[in-house]
Image (cartoon, rainbow, N blue to C red; front, side, top):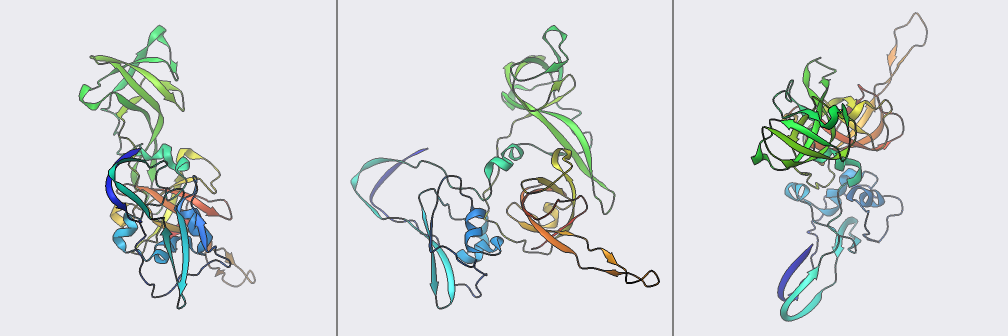
Length: 339
């Protein structure tokens, strides 16, 4: 991306800092400075400085609004750790560049670094993921293909009924998936939409012609089409929820049996419970019951905290989170709550 700049002096852009009432615990040997490189994330940099990376906003002195719209950090920036009177804080140091009074074009290069690894969640940012029961029944439907083909893939041409020209030419392909059932109430919170791929409209008609441009699974007659919304992820700074949250792991996206670091979890809490993108939750395993003897009643052992998850997508009653740290396999029914 390129930007047109008219100025006499290009002032440095510094992160807004505030003194901390109580320092979050620093790592044993935090670096005095860190040069941001492509591939860095806010979470990764936070882990270099803090034992509890979700306390990243405290080290910057961010207020609530700044957490939701954090200072943009770019490759090439230098992050400096300052200690003054027992208090620690971070700032971004950028050089002051003096320009003569004329129109200049500045190449901004790479974009701001994301909160968490973008490649781990990118496929999930522009997909509905959760739909109401029977929510795809009225969506445009694939009704056929050349030579009566049953299974389609990337590059194939398909015919779709019910497409509207005003929805654009870019579409996503879905199949209704399994229900998302709250393990605490047995209530169905929605249905997971199974993402199959992408398609581009070649021509609109009562039966429109489309070309499949991407296929992560086989596409077949009866599959449904949804207008492509584009990615909508906001790069929130990692932070703990402001209110008490306690929920359960419902499933792994796509039904993966073993869940560990970089797995995607669905959680039975959403927007109405106060969850938002950027929230960090601790993952707990319920403690076992220990028996001293067969005649005595058992003692329930404390719950074991073994991981952290970063919420990146929220719906009304369901959220999706990326497991960032895990010392063991994540199981369905494990507890997620404030760290």
